[in-house]
Amino acid sequence: MKLKYDFDTLRGDLFGGVTAMVVALPLSLAYGVASGMGAAAGLYGAIAVGFFAAVFGGTQTQISGPTAPMAIVMAVIISTYAENLTQALTVVVMGGLLQALLGVLKLGRFVAYTPYVVVSGFMSGIGVLVMAIQVLPFFGSAPVPGGAVGMILALPEALRDINPSAFGVGVVTLSVSVFWPQRFRKILPTPLVGLFAGTLVGVLWLGDAPVIGEVPTGLPGLQVGLPSLAFLARAVEPALILALIGSVVSLLTCLVADSLTRTSHDPDRELIGQGVGNAAAGLIGGLPGAGTPVYTVPNIRSGGRTRAAGAIFALFLLAILLGLGPYVESIPLAA
Image (cartoon, rainbow, N blue to C red):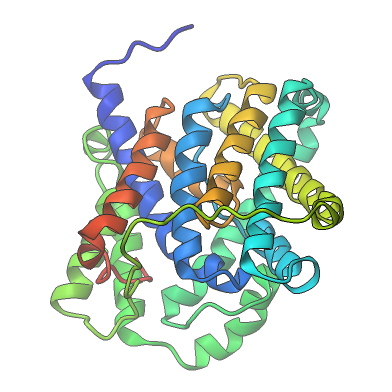
């Protein structure tokens, strides 16, 4: 059934896109640093992949951007396969083109055969991952390398050295999100209200809480190079790995979005959209990405219902890049 686009739908997409953007901003910057490409690359990638995957992809509510697996693969590519950043970005562009080719060849349909128990396990794992990612900032500790396992191993130290301001911001955010009256949730979604309340408390009273901090500004330039044929042949393997990992993560996230919204996605179109987004990211020096529940679920929970939410997500990140960065730098990480 075709969704009627009215004011309520627009409001939901706006709230969903903004909420997902706030979640993605610090993670994108962190993934950019972890990959070795730099914080700005994470932001460029979030904009490119987020916009093009939303516009050309096959899932109405999916939000795409840099993810931990893609950052890890890029770190390996930079250290093992590429001699410079131009070569690394060539691999990203090739990976995006291969990903789109998988969609053109209609290979995405095979995700339909994924057993529900696999999807359920994936959703449970993502839930644990999200909690693991958030628990250290909740106590005021800086993120650590090693993904969810690294976060869990660092938890005892975080509990011994709690930042009272960050903990206070986290408690306020969580409390407001839990106890926000049901009758108001259609007007203002709980994640956004909780974020606003936590930020207000952090800015006005608990200023010692760690914040997002400085955000890169300025438009990226085209990163176009002419690699040798020898490098192109050598780059096929890492590009294919990048394409396959991004495709699997994105398509599994599509199933998560389907289960939450009672809709169905077009897997082949999704791969084409993801491929276009990753190729665009490579052309502007951005980190490759994929659809991920870490961004998609907040979008859906905040009211996002159409691909406009993904476009809004990317456009707000672009606005931050063009000068609105100072307005989000003071948002506490614990919020």
